[in-house]
Structure formats: structure tokens, C-alpha cells
Amino acid sequence: MQHCDLIIFDWDGTLMDSVGRIVSSMQSAAIDTNLDKPCEQSTKAIIGLSLPRAIETLFPGIKSSEIDKVVANYKRHYLSLDSIPTPLFSHATQLLQKLRAERKFLAVATGKGRVGLERVWQISNAKSYFHSSRCGDEHTSKPAPDMILSLMKEFNVTAEQTVMIGDSVLDLEMAKQAGTYAIGVTHGAHDYNSLAAVNPNAIVNSLEELSSLLLTP
Image (tube, rainbow, N blue to C red):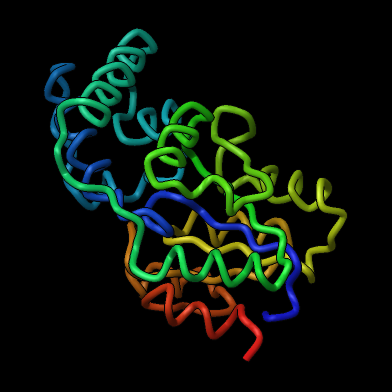
């Protein structure tokens, strides 16, 4: 996939090690809203969805008024109360720098809202590496292909020139619907077997391993 011109990354669990904080914050938000605390596995399964859809999926039958409360409580915990660190994964900065040096178009397609992405970009000093982005509050939620198709149109590239990289089956299913290449990474929300079930073009265990698939030798 070294020939691909557009490289699209998911954010949480792919470039940023934030899955633990997301799970913890969602569990705390449920408790604060008097809902049953979801287990770690079921909470990981909704990472990548836009926040309202994630809550609807995690708490079937939840009332719309409760969704707003969970959203508010989740944001409060994630932004202020939860102290679990959220660093970039090892080799993330090096990979992005090298891809930029090879004149690749870099983009993010995330379930995060725009405000949330801009915040973590500022914290991680990563915004300058990306040419564009698509967020969960701007497009139909994953696994719909809208985010990828919109980015392909922006950069005037074909599906054969595009690769989507993510830690969730939602990312890989989105790529499949868009007809692009797909690479799964195992250091985030979903394990190897879950990712393999979607039949991506490749699965890697680290961003350093990903480099060999994307960069010219």
C-alpha cells in the first residue's frame, strides 16, 4: 500500500492511547446517570461511533433525556475527572513526519466531535501533520463510508489510492463500504480476531510495523 496517496487514520486507539480513559469515563458517566455500569468489552465495542449513537448502542432503550445526561457526565469525566493518561502511541510522530516527507495526504476520520478532536490535537501537537479531518458530529457515524468518501472527493483520489487505518471493526467496515484499502491495528479497542473477521488487507501490532506497509523502503 506504499502507492496510496491518501492515508486516513482513526484517532482514539489508533494514534492516541485513549481507550482506557474512554472506557473509564463512560462507566463513570453511567453510574452518575443511575444506569447499569457497562463492562469493559461492551464499552470498547462502541468506540468509534459518534457519542450519541455510542450511548444508544451501549444502553438499549435509553430515553433521549438520559442520553443528554450521559453525554454531559461523560465529557465531565473525560475532560476533568479521569486521570488516565492519553499519550500518542510509540512511533506515531515519526510515522506522520515520514509520511508528510513522502508528500502523502494525511487525514483523520474519527467518531470524536470537532471540538474534541481540536482539543486533543492541541494537547498532542499533532494537528500540523494532517491536511484534513472528518468528525462524528459532521457526518454519518461509522461504519457508513461518508467520511472516507468525502475525503476522497476533497483530494480527488480514487479508492485504489486510499487506505484507512484503525483499531476498530467499525473503521475496517467503513473502509470496506468505501472500497478502499484497510489496515487494522491491534493496540486499541479490538483484538486481532475481531479485526480479522472483517478481512482487512493487513493487521499490524504497532505503528512501527505499520511504517513498513506505508513508507517507501
